[in-house]
Length: 249
Ligand SMILES: NC(=O)c1ccc[n+]([C@@H]2O[C@H](COP(=O)([O-])OP(=O)(O)OC[C@H]3O[C@@H](n4cnc5c(N)ncnc54)[C@H](OP(=O)(O)O)[C@@H]3O)[C@@H](O)[C@H]2O)c1
Image (cartoon, rainbow, N blue to C red; front, top):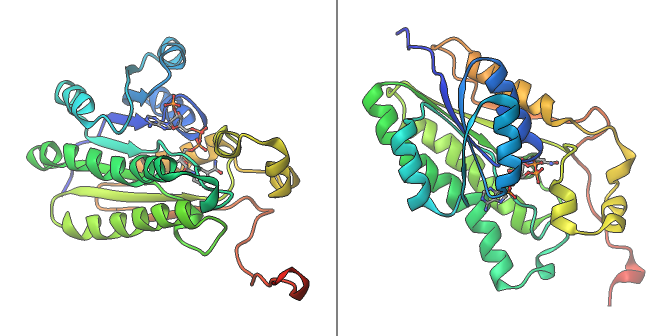
């Protein structure tokens, strides 16, 4: 079946990092972009630069976003907004911080996806892109962040199964370390970043992830690019953590 070309894309988390780069790349490639994030000044600058439409909203505010979707009728949803709360350990957060991380990283993408599916089904076309993480595929440092991203991985896999036959594609993008405001926002602490080896490698750039998203969007209609994992060349996953005997009680 030859699906019409998809052209109207919502990008969440568009004010920084991967979302900003993706909004710019898609706009330059001729997609109509609706950029979603909370910081209005940055959205205005993005719109000035790219001509995109924008809505200053929290991804958890599904009523507000539903109203915007009603007017825009997206045929692409890029669930990218995310936070690294708890990346240095679950005990670094209080109950509200834990809930916020789950709501932004997991509940919101699921809710926004549920909002766009009926219209996509009606139009007989659509593409959901979930920005997950290598933390959703492998055992890494954060229980909370990895838990939410693992759920995004399973959500993406099962959604593809649920939507089979609908002509709606589902792609999951799983980056390793990307140079963005993410870790700084997550830890608020330069020393902790360096302790995590942050400054030791050449990280992926947000534009690298935007390129991967464009690749998936531009695949021929009969091709669903299901999962893309991207790592900096200087980052690898694996190993076993051992607690030295002198650090045990
Ligand atoms: N950086 C990495 O190494 C890395 C690796 C793997 C996966 N990822 C994933 O990639 C995605 C983008 O991260 P990034 O590296 O580009 O981080 P970033 O530079 O910190 O950007 C995060 C974006 O999310 C938005 N956002 C956060 N909470 C929001 C909320 N409640 N409502 C609406 N927008 C919200 C922020 O905008 P406002 O503050 O203006 O709302 C910002 O635009 C995330 O899902 C992250 O988990 C990142």
